[in-house]
Length: 489
Image 1 (cartoon, one colour):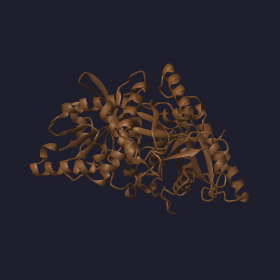
Image 2 (cartoon, helix red, strand yellow):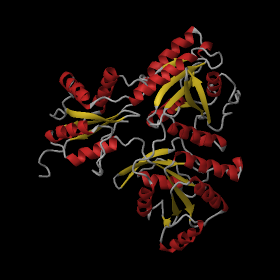
Image 3 (cartoon, helix red, strand yellow):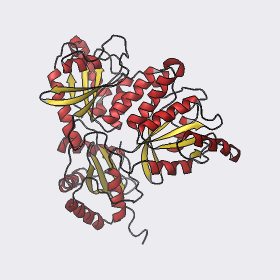
Image 4 (tube, one colour):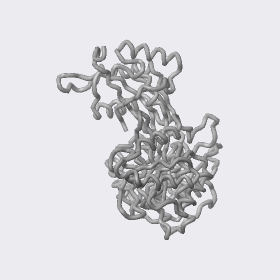
């Protein structure tokens, strides 16, 4: 969550700082010996908001995961020489030519489970939902198939920029096969060998042209439409029942069979005089790579719902032990930078012994999100349902909170004086100054005289929460270390 910032120094964004605040901040940076362009780059990067999203789509076994690994520069996406191999995590951060973006590996579809038309549609729908641009991967040794043609129609209907990747071109002899893919009507096919890296640079250059520098905000527009709430959690924890209860009527099919809900269902619901948009998402099964067909797309669409939401309400079955899957779902919401509320369902079914052990589990298993509002509810009886909206409002308030630079630096000065960084190697790094470059979620940039250890950054985050609140929201802290003075002079 907390990363050292690396900037290409391009652009002159200054996040959410006003002009006067920005001028004062840059003067402070100059006094401390920071290069103005580096400071501007750091602010622009920290204040960018959500990264542009690139979806990698294509038929099974055309090399999508191999290409994703090539783009992100490490082997993370599962690669296997068999169609339909999927994985727990489907999105990764990548960087090319100094620009960062998110890569979504959509995996293959199970044609025999869903039928060709339905499965192709599910794949393209996910690309439409989340992507700012799409890389469409085609196996150049096979050529364009009927399935590829179906994907082209759906992608064209989506209106998103598409970069055509002609994969498995391992040498010049294969480039003629790539040229034949002009027939798809998507423009120039880029001949690539994702296995060996051949041609990926040219393709990524085209990707950067297709991706926006600053993506359109997918949530929380200034026009103030209904706030978007994603209900997420394991299958059969009661998400549909909860939605029906807050709506006051049966709007979603409820069935004891886990995984009844396949598609997110958007519902405008009035609570406390406020209209909210609730998204009832399909449950996420324990392991995505064990899913087939519809369940796999349920996971992808849940990820899409989180991407579009402002607040994630994670529903946990309090009658069962907190699972690794519960924690993974929470991590998905935190990494997406969404406000977070944790709702423990079926609370009315607990006896005193289970409540005691659940409290211990929460202390140990969910310690990393102790800042998230917690509500104990019963989707069946409606118990404590009135507490859900105040918890959501609290999380949104924390998510949108911004601390003025002057007040933040006074606070940082107190921290440095009362709790200095431990001495390491005979040196004691110091936080020199900082600013909050953005909100939704709050993003801070700290400028320091040396590397700040992760433990100290966690301490700073904890103190930020104690001083300024930030209840219900993750906090991103980036650190820019001052270059040694005179190095380049």
